[in-house]
Length: 219
Image (cartoon, rainbow, N blue to C red; front, side, top):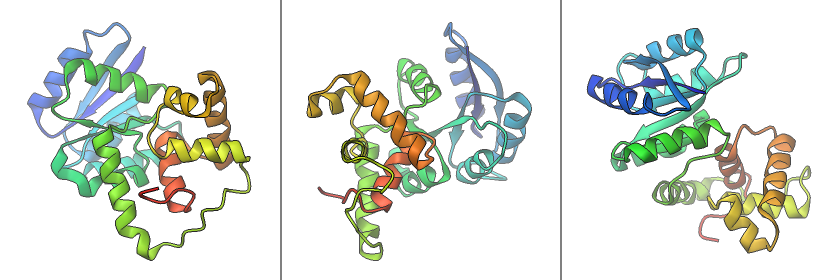
């Protein structure tokens, strides 16, 4: 059972998400929060597996709440940012804060449930449109960041190759097809990459790949 906390300052949004998710046999909504500070407090109390986190909330916004949630020593929940296309500026900062993915507020009910499952399983949820905006942000910042293009010393050549493909937001199956290997082999590589680099999930791996210069925007 996946335990979910919904943080959004709009009561109708919280109610709608709660009503639908409660119909799913493998998902339990354990609580709601109307602002970022309440989200942090409720998460500490309820220990959810996933927090659906709106960005624009009073008292404490979703980015600040995400940073605080994921800085705790206790096992932290996965954070799925609720966003809209007019919040491009938040995409990069949300990943830096430790969010595992993004869900558009106009997503269907089925997409909502699947997003919760994907994030709870430890995968990143980055829609192609969101990934494009993220890469654009890295490109904008590129002039002020050194670009080495060298693989991290901890990784093998194959692991670096897989990391570069992860940074393009490809799925395990898509990476497997490109490298002509089994999907399970890719899963093994991704697990080793995260462990060696001390990264939480694929979302952090994407940020790492661009910030270290392993991958350059547009390549």
